[in-house]
Length: 409
Ligand SMILES: *Cc1c(COP(=O)(O)O)cnc(C)c1O
Image (cartoon, rainbow, N blue to C red):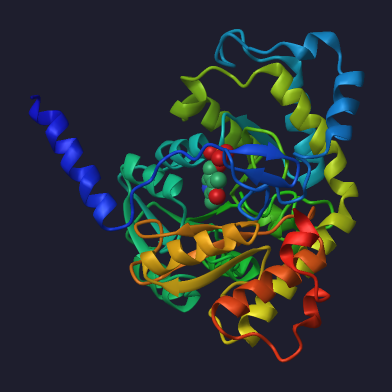
């Protein structure tokens, strides 16, 4: 028996014993619903399709009916630096730059490429990276791949960040502050104007903001928290992704023209990868052009987030954050797994998030809301959660007295 494989077996068994073993779920999708083979349909509360666009077959039909035949090409066959720079790539980059009101954007394969590629390109040995404690794994990997020194500051603790900047700015040629705008696991937000003000105290500080969960969802035109908070021009590296609210795949970085040219020459996950297929880029462009008109969806999504958070807090349950991502923190992994299984039996596809994705003792159910949900459905979810914790309100008519089964299945 090969000892390499024995070792893997032992490590997997350990994960299983801790309740932390991952496996790929087999799911069938039916618009807003999903089911596992043989299960009842469950309302999908775990998707990143925040605006409900992935389930909009009318949008897809409209795209197919109007797309230029050459844009249907399913492969680019090459890196953009060789033969893969199709006109639609630059069309999308220009559209994004116009909507954001920034100098330039660069299209990238995905958010993971963006975050693992930009930092190693722009940071060197004389760079200090100051990163929020809760930034996404892809940013951590980007930091690891860079030659920079890194210090993590406590989550959203800008007073600590201010001290670190004061202490270190003279010792490095460049400092890069790295944050998300809406944080993926806590659903809370960074104070971007304050981060901009901190960065402006020194002339060698850059600001890097990952808007994966905010692009499409926030801002008058859907360009993210930076648009909402009026600070797009002050963010040196603004990353957005298309796999979530934009119902596509891929990512972009918005930056100055000089930074774009630099990245084209130095960013390895841009240079050494096949460009996105033209058909995918054309679909992204189709969606991006329509994002400014989805104000109603954005408003509805914000209302649903408020409703769920407020309802959980009223029941004295722990739900941090301020966005459409609402985590219900329960503590131990086993408890999160049990609650998720219960909600799934009730017709809600909610998933547990466990360590190491989140700190030990903060296992949670991560409710990821979309504009395709109805307020009554969120009320019904709340009612079920309250019942589970024995915290039903004296007025259970919040869900119109209807049982989950008759309402959705
Ligand atoms: C999803 C996500 C990414 C990765 O984006 P992909 O396009 O899916 O690779 C990066 N950063 C954050 C914060 C994310 O949530």
